[in-house]
Length: 317
Image (cartoon, rainbow, N blue to C red):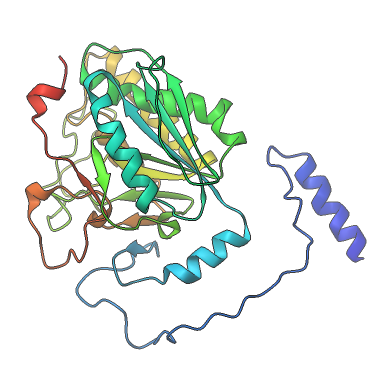
């Protein structure tokens, strides 16, 4: 009976799009770890919401044990892809981005940095840890910065379908004009995740800057919506990222036919997607901070934050 069960599992995997892990039937070796016992009656944080009504955890400082999580993800030999777009003047931020990522992003795990850039012929010299690599992907230099942010959903979808799905298990998409200041690890990984926008995590949904024009596919009526998600940090397993980016790109194209450009471009469509396709994990503003918003008491650390810059100088028309 056991042999038959294994054959059935093997057959189902062979006839699916996902490949059967070679170590599926190896004996599980449990590692002994010593850590403080969690208290079911005493949550680690009482000042913030830690779980959504649909049971998705919200990741805040002090709510997880990274040692336990690292042990779990090392068992499956996780591979993480990190995408950024370094187009035109935004190439100036790439050096700081990669160097800080090497210090703080997924330390000890395998990482592919996927850099979309119109500077593909330039020489990029970065010292990377073992198991980590830089992949330069040549893309067009669009005239307006809005076109770059709108088209990145299409490019992520296309490369995820043709390439990333064969190279990594999870894909994380972030903005390049930012830097890592504290550890960002496997605690962020989930089927599909988004991040709370630093400017709206204390606001009501009536204050959210959703697309309010009913003619737009991104339209969300006043009074609707759970959270306002930032467009600069989202991800998940490859299949879910493909679904998300495909929806956002197709929605943009539908609006374009009507000469509509959503208020906050790809971020508007991302928020519409998460309204009906709830994320399975949400990152707190620690993971996409901007010092413009100060230092509220709930923010115990700034893990990933924007670099101060003059937008009129770096943004192209």
